[in-house]
Image 1 (tube, one colour):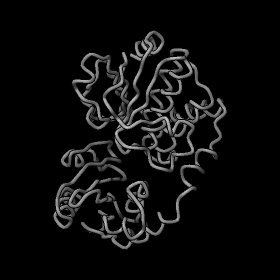
Image 2 (cartoon, helix red, strand yellow; image 1 turned 90 degrees about the horizontal axis):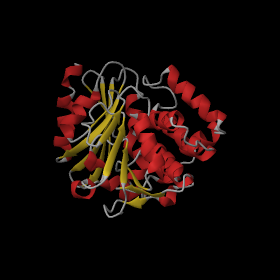
Image 3 (tube, helix red, strand yellow; image 1 turned 180 degrees about the horizontal axis):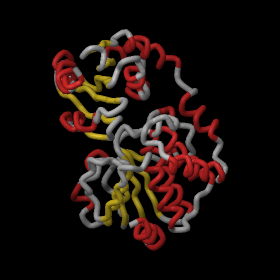
Length: 315
C-alpha cells in the first residue's frame, strides 16, 4: 500500500491535501509535511482545512498556505490525513467522485472512505505513517518536512508520554533529528508561547472543575460568556482537557467547550484501560482509546448529565 501511494506521488501532477476541522498537531504536522514534499517535487498542490489552524502553529512556514475548504480545486488526487470520517475534512462526495481519494489515518473507527485506504491504528501519529511512505519510496525528507513530522509525533504522543509511544516512535523521532530537527525549537513554540488572555480564560475554566463518579470523572467547561469576558476564542483552549485528566484518582477527564449556544465540543482523555472512543461515538465523534472527541447539542445542564451518564460504568 505504501509503495502504491509513493508511486502515485511520483507519477501524478496535481494534488489537494486535506485534514480535519479544528486540526491538532498531528493533523497539521502530517498534512504540512506531505504538502511540502509535493511542493519540493514540483507538483501542483493545495492545502485545505475546514477551519484555520490555531494560532500556536503560526510559527510554521506554511501556516499561511492553508486555505479554507472550497471543494473547487481541479486536481487528480485528494489526500486526506488524520480524518476518521470524510465529512470532518470538509470533502463533498460530488467533488471527489471523479478524483483519486487517498485516506491515510490511524483512527480505528475510520471506515475506509478512500479509493486507497492506509489505516494503521497502532501508529503513534499519522506523521509516523507519512514518514514510512516517504522513506520506503525514496522521497525527499528535508529539514522542513522533518520538522513537520516531528511536530506531528510530539503532539500526538503527549511529548512521548502516551501509551501509543513505542520503540518505533522513538526510532522515527531520532531519524528526524538526524535530518536537522531541533526538539527545543518545536517544543518551545508549541508549548511555551501562549497568549496572556489564555491564562485568564484558563482561570475561569478551572473554577468550573467538578468531580463525579467517586472522583473518577473530572469535568471542566468553557462558555461563550467566558470567551467574551476574556476576549478569547476556541483557539485558546487547545490543552484545557489535560488539566481534567491530570488530577489524582481521575480516570477520565472531559472538557466541554460551548462553540455556539447549546452546542458543545467535547474533548475526552483517559488513562489506563478506559476506551473513550466508544463513548465519543455516541456524540457524533470518535478517536482513540485514550483520546477522543465529539459534539453535544443540548442545554448545558442536560449536556453535562449526558456525559456523566455515559461514564456511569466508572462507579
